[in-house]
Image 1 (cartoon, rainbow, N blue to C red):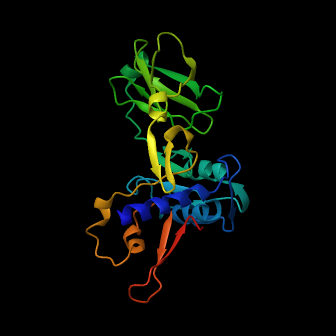
Image 2: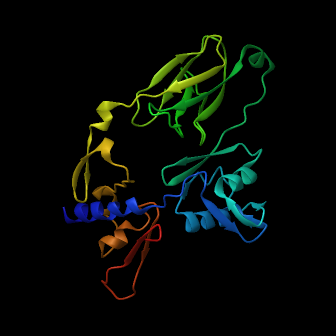
Image 3: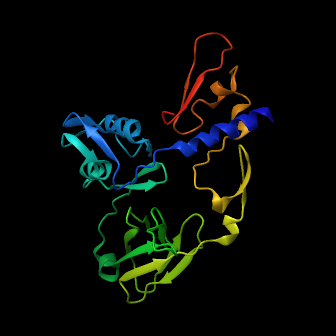
Length: 258
């Protein structure tokens, strides 16, 4: 019980994450050539954003060219991953990198398929970033970019697009002859009424505007450590645990630099 309570208090610190928007967050490029891994560490240090990616898809040791000076993170990402098949999405305090497999060109399929484009917003008119757009019954899918826009190739006019996003009701759209769509997602009132336990009580899920991270006790109970701080090492994104050297002394905790 004590461990669970301490974990909840640690999660509260996530509310102090950087509020730099995806459009204005900037990074200072001091070298015109650096590895992708070095760039990722620089962005995480200077903006507070944390990167999420599959190491098997993104080569962090690859050297890339960048323009010196203070540039926006968006422009740098566009330069680094241009033509690589890697897309990026800003989601809360995270930048998610995804590499889409390039399918072999099939002339027969191309004759019957067509490209659908659109934009997804919420009921207030704000763009929905990272919404899933999937052709029903297939593995064909994509996600919306930082402007809520998407582009996807469907096999035929009979295809149905399934749009989903956490906290919103799923929608199904019949493609038919239309090639451009403007889709408005409605909030899922049932999921927003769920109660989330935080360090200072309980709140409705729909009222929480901060990041909440949960670490289950089962994950920590078998770790050979002496303090809760040591047990949390590597379990919470952005949490840096630094030991002080003395046996049994609690380590210092820094969450995204705070």
